[in-house]
Image 1 (cartoon, helix red, strand yellow):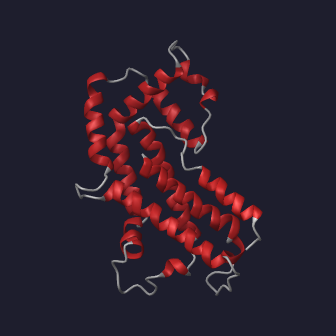
Image 2 (cartoon, rainbow, N blue to C red):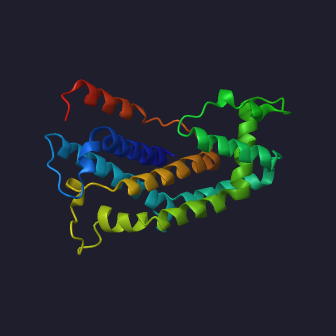
Image 3 (tube, rainbow, N blue to C red):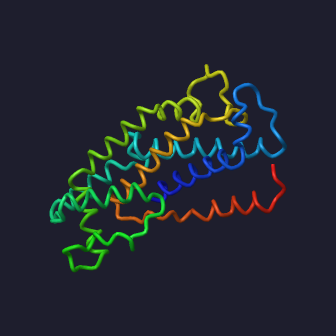
Length: 230
């Protein structure tokens, strides 16, 4: 989960730099951009964060090496354990909760989810625990495969091989992270993958949706607000 949190915060850093700082410069791409002092640093930071997010997700989702940290073997073990005590929560309850999390990501407010305890006198935490258990047992591997397929459909495995891992010596710009803008569509698609992974992992491994690295974004805001504008 710590790696998932790291993949997410790297994506948020990349997106925030592109949205809040480099927006005007991006509008002029690809006709040629005369960078202002400081933009070159932020562009490199944003692109490195983008590639780091992809690399982490690639290892977690696509790796076949036993020595690397991978989601699938752990998920299979968790599902096998939980099959012995499957939850009796209704599918409609599970689906509504999952849909609400997708709507409210990345900052859900569980206090608003009063539907969780309708007809169930247990503490809300117990209800959520049963929902998560049922979802991972019933559709955990299906959800994992859908995530992997989407990651590869968007060609992030190729981005990782060619740009992040430098496995293609014929690339026109193998060091593009230092001076090329990442297309908006690619950032948007990575956001979809990060969101999907984060919510899936919430159900798979019983960890919080809140990101312990969120203070990094606050630090970034402090720097860009208090220092001379770039």
